[in-house]
Image 1 (cartoon, rainbow, N blue to C red):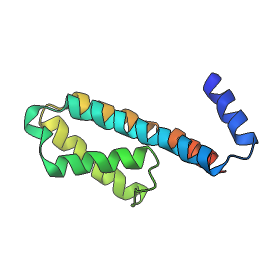
Image 2 (cartoon, helix red, strand yellow):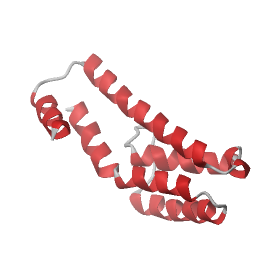
Image 3 (cartoon, one colour):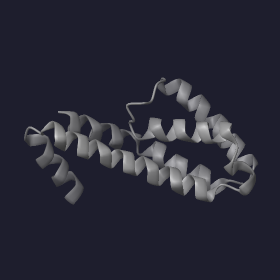
Image 4 (cartoon, rainbow, N blue to C red):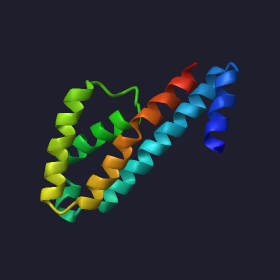
Amino acid sequence: MIRSLLHFLLGRRKKTSEEKERMMGSLKIARFEIMKRVHQSLPEQLRNRDEIGRAIAEQINYATASSQFEGDDEEMRRKLKALFDELLGNGADEAANEIAKAVDMRPHYLALAESIMR
């Protein structure tokens, strides 16, 4: 309720570029926190594998509406399945779950980013 009221109020007035930058910064913080939770839940044998780290970062950037993300939804679904297979095959169920939660929230992150930029 409070979140939707905040979105309503913020969407009704013109934001300064500083406000937009600060608000988009909050998405960067969310992105960092998700990445930290995923990394902490990875088994030791996966923590320093660059290809896993890049795949996780790409999914989190996709999920959180990062302006750095490039790719389409179908491509990301294929990559997400491959990442899940890798994580689950290595006992990283908790990490896979954290990524799944972030991807499930993608529509909300997109809407938030859009409302910030208005």
